[in-house]
Image 1 (tube, one colour):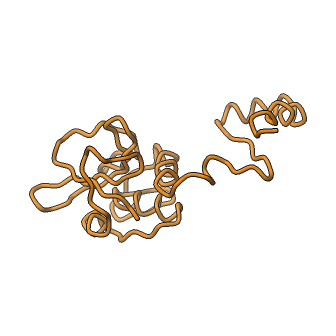
Image 2 (cartoon, helix red, strand yellow):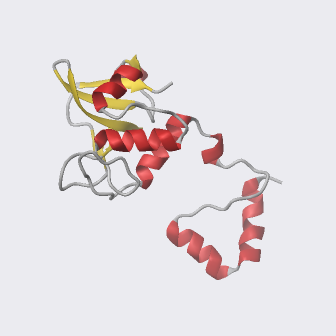
Length: 157
């Protein structure tokens, strides 16, 4: 029996209120002995999911979570929770990644914004030309379209 087939019986045993609670909060059901999508996911996918889970967290310069973030603090936090170590700043993170072209980018790769040779911002690629990032003072972690062509991509290995 697959995990998907077990869900109706689990919901029946859990009761209607529990099923509604799970649906309302967008939760998932843990089935013993069955790997969840997150457990089977790559570190990049996990990092992307973790960054997305921080939607609405306020920007704070120098913060690396769990409640407030600057740009590199968000990427550091997300990858650390996914089991990968990154340096603290956007520029140092760029230097630590495997550089890839835009045509080879994948969800979970890091997107580095630069002016000339200077990296000044980082986010996590979400696919379809969008990133999760913590943009600036007065803002919050959010999903946003990449607004410039002055970006480089890096893959965490």
